[in-house]
Image (cartoon, rainbow, N blue to C red; front, side):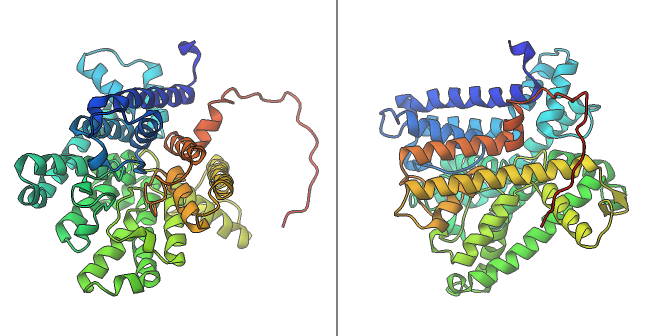
Length: 443
């Protein structure tokens, strides 16, 4: 049966198995701080959030989980961020096993690479760069955490938050200071802010972009079209998001000095794509700030990365398509290149499926959670499907049905909502006879 599974189905099933294993481990008494079982739902939710690198929590990571439980969560984050296919291929390389065509196809599917050639070499680069970025990030964070928490705990905090940031997970251990406080204590700490934001951005631009930049360095004209679009959208979203966040949350930022305002504004634009840390209280966001965060969470990071969302390239294709239609132009042209028609179809499909899922689940949760504001529910839903982890604090308060809905959204967001749908309809049936065309009125 496994031999008959498609690439998409294999990836979908693999993530399910990892979540199941994580759930079992987190249900063990040794995983809980109090020595008792966390229960199935709490363990299942946490395992899904970790594997899908989301960061939504029903139990504070420090006060609820023991060192063993925290280690399980970190392992799930690392596997979920890199993808279990990457981890499996690394073990095969280490054991000097031959990487066959099926494994190379799986690498291409899981990494969203444009071609199958060089897939194994790309995996080696990904692991190497990941270790370097996470290692450097951990060392820099230790500079702040060791004086504060001691040597052993400071090292653990540095490693944990570096991996969590690079994998865009958003899990934190700051419950030692105050439960569910995330990085609010460090709102004006330049070192912590810059390191966390750098790790989020690097992890979120995608493995294909890393490879392109490593090959061509500063020769931007030689970059692939994909890389140019990702870098352009990343800069636009960070700069534009920071300015908008500063404008919308001016009252919340007024209590900070200039340095704190700048750091909080940039962090507020970076973290929704799609890390889940926060340095100011998200429950205090204005309605405009919440909608901005929802929009950034919906877009997310870039393809073949540790981030979620519909991805920057999808958003760029949608915007270009709308612009070209308004100007009555044929084809999508950017950076001296014309995009393939299949890109437009896939972008429109991904955009619509994600929006449909988010809106449907928002309405369903609004019906279940009548006492909660719609903006809180929308933040929660878009955070789940975008695998972000930003919450106004309602995750642990919602009913059981809502929690299972969030679990479903996190899973779809990690493997891709389109991939989830394709896992049920993978076989393509081309009609032997095409039906006659008839026009309808649009708009």
